[in-house]
Image 1 (cartoon, helix red, strand yellow):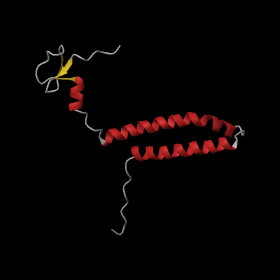
Image 2: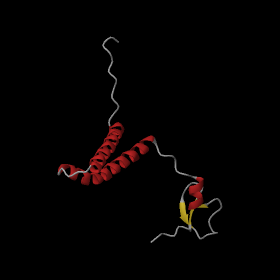
Image 3: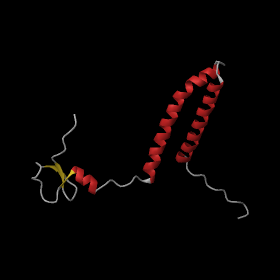
Image 4: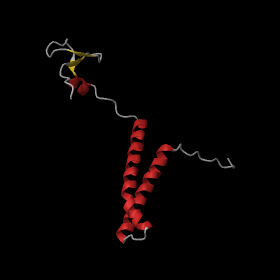
Length: 117
């Protein structure tokens, strides 16, 4: 069931209350108007990083499912050239995603100072 939010109005300070349409105090706006006037801030770099990590993990899970048949054909030595090509393609895609995941999750490596310095 969808909740009816037509009677929810927001004060200039951001407080929500229920009012009958047309009876809300002056300066109060509907939720829809409030959301247009006060868009959420853009995601932070950390939020974008966490989102990308989740996307990569999801993509890896999908690739794991897609690789089962070509891998089974390879294991049982019944793989066609198409199976082998698909297996190789999926493994390459997984490796690229794993590398990106490592870059996002591992701390940056410190550069070693030379002994001469």
